[in-house]
Length: 429
Ligand code: URA
Image (tube, rainbow, N blue to C red; front, side, top):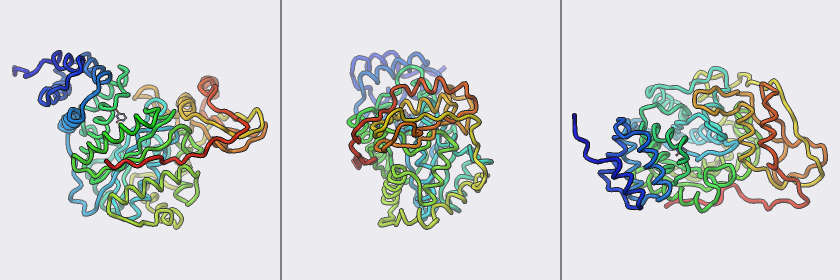
């Protein structure tokens, strides 16, 4: 039996007492946890110490590197095209990856979007795309490479070989109240993105009621930490800080979000979704060396839509296939005349989840037709009796708990809320 060079209790105590953990001890902790030598109880205690005490930049870099080293590292060096990816820290109604990947790829750039499924109130890109008949999330590495080379955009499930230490640690954080720690979020996201092997990465870091980070200062700190991790590892990385106080677009769910994404690809769609898609596309194309691209033109002239169709077909999906429709609906109407002053993203996300659009446990299925269709957005004028939003479900028994989640979630007032842009800041260092 080999002798372990460190003791988990010493590492936990060091962080508990506010010291920086030496590099070799931190690398060992991650490796020993992945091997099962360090227990879940010890790692949970360490994660809580990090949550309370934080980590220095250098410790975050080492933690990220140790998680990358726990699994495989992919490389797109032989593709003959530059690669650029986008990662969003997650929000309500955030379907941006769907129009964005084909839009950016329509300029000749490869877009490897290794995505996840939803857990809790934030939706998962794969769940949304699985509303499309026949569409397949699981690709082999060879299939992914071929699609990147021959078409350009790929949205698929991340293989289990990327950063397995993060997979184990993230599941543990989820059940021990240690998700919302900047060093842990930054290392978790960036270990997967760096291991994926993309040349460039744009981070959509959200703040507000529907985001991990409620306030913009914490979102900025998270963004700066991740941008530094990416650039230090040779991945050209920038971030946009974007508003997640209200749901994005009008659709919250799965099938309805695909429908809305197709509207954007057809040159229409909600103003906020288009604004964010275009801003992220410009940022991604800039990092890939494509400057002055006519991004709006590619939405208007059908080239992004063409790329979408090819991407969906390559993964077995029927882009013209009928999307599932809900069996039951319930519409909530305005109880007074006025202007919609507020629609809080978080309760709308929780309500959509309770309607069946999301899952409470990783093994649960989602109901693709479930969710919420908004009919109005903050700033819109309404009159008494006008529909505000419609709940969509397969079983009417779900409406009561969804409606509970929405208590106090919106306001109709006499005055319009101040109009704010979706993209608030750009972080490059
Ligand atoms: N997404 C991740 O992959 N990890 C986190 O810690 C938070 C969001």
